[in-house]
Amino acid sequence: MATLSDAEIVARVCGGETSLFEVLMRRHNQRVYRAARAIVKDEAEAEDVMQQAYINAFVHLKQFESRAQFSTWLTRITIYEALARRRKQHPEETLGINDDDIDDAAGAMRTSEVSPERQAYSGELGRLIEDAVDALPENYRSVFMLREIEGLSTSETAEGLGVGEEAVKTRLHRARAMVRRMLTDRLGGSASLAFQFHATRCDRVVAAVLSEIRRQNLDPR
Image 1 (cartoon, rainbow, N blue to C red):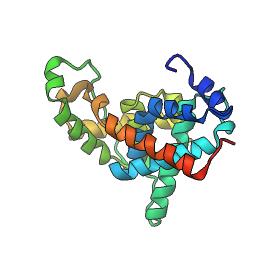
Image 2 (cartoon, rainbow, N blue to C red):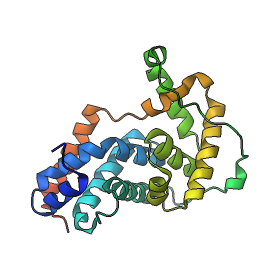
Image 3 (tube, one colour):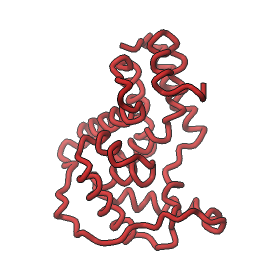
């Protein structure tokens, strides 16, 4: 199955091979987790968002248009679910922030390769990065997670968040500056090691989604 594209797997799932949806989940679990985690800022809540986002994606799978990347489509569903949950839990909270409220600091985190020395303590540094990213305002945190940590392109991030590419560039620049102020330069490329979605959690989410699909006897539509 590793040789099949996302679009090919989607077509087969829609054709009745529903068990193949597991392949899509395992292929994109880390990206979906990071998108959810960027918004809800809680690991357990992020897993709940993931499960519902996967259910939403499954039942609307026939609406997926292959001219777009499946990962972008799935990320956007995840973002919608996370934002809806945030608004329900915190109706008084304003999720946006004016860019003018943040001073335009220069500089960005280095992105050099991680050396063996950095690898030795990357776990500790990863937690420091997670704390710094969690402290970012909503708009900046979402962009930073998708661009800097998950590695989406500017256009993919813009499509996933429903904003313009210039907004993505501006927010990423400012998010990097804010993160840099909270960290030391020695962090280097360790950002990509943060917010890992490990195998046991991956198995748990996949099992929960497949169980719910069977329980509700869901079909793509």
